[in-house]
Figure 1: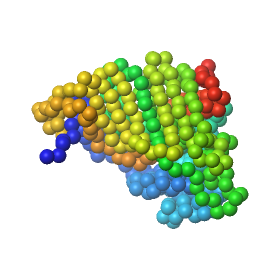
Figure 2: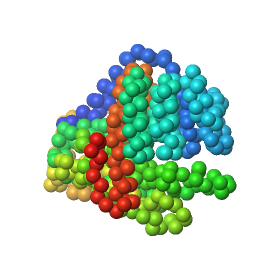
Figure 3: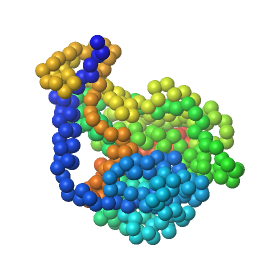
Figure 4: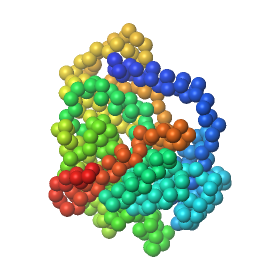
Length: 394
């Protein structure tokens, strides 16, 4: 007999009910049902075209414009939009299009802030991919502009904030299922050089911008930022300091951003959060581990497991059927069962709904800015080999 998947009692058992209630509410909420949002995609590389595929699957959400400075990428973006979009080489021309309601910013990190500011000035709602902005000044400039544009929706692309699994897990933690949190242990390991083919040498830094500090914050921004955002979210805090190290120790190919990083953040509550990214070993890939005095939660991209302290825990719900019980087996956690969509798709659905309902995104300006500051703190710590305190205004 196959081992059943169990749902933890109490608040964990509410997952199915919460999800069903959410679905029923959406089914009977016909307000704005036929409103259409037209969006322009600025940056049609892999991420931009991937999100365009997602938008194509969402009702009343249309990509009507694409922009990229590289012709072959623009062509790919237009093809992905299924011939319904107009192409632009200059994003400012795209912003002049009055038929566009919203903008998706999926360009190199160092350009996020200015493009998002210009989009807000043009009266467009903004979905700005993570990390929100690069460096303290760009973060500050974007925050000021967005705060002056309260009538517009600004959402940051930390998509796990939209995952119904992750939001449920955060609720469980805040309700005390893990007890007092002691630590986070997070990793996102891959085995590959992260380098993309370049058709001609002059395009090296445009295509492989992630390798160069002028344009990129490297692994900490591109990968760790999601997990740092999660730790801040769970704790409802911002870290007070960070220490870290890294280097270009494996891929000796002229890159400037590190090919491995190791960070420890401290929070006022006493929690320590560790983050690791490797590009030369992919064991266990992506993982978030939240450790408390009552138990541990382990998350991957789309699944989560609960490991109670002491090795045993009686459950009142099995597969959503009340009354059944089971004992915890040592070394095997209880799956946390929640019906949910792929996080990037859900984030875009939420963005569309946030615009229509004039609702504040759960991954918004404040959370995006806080995480972006954490990223810059980590870079300062690693590049200068010192413990970095949070900025006084943070």
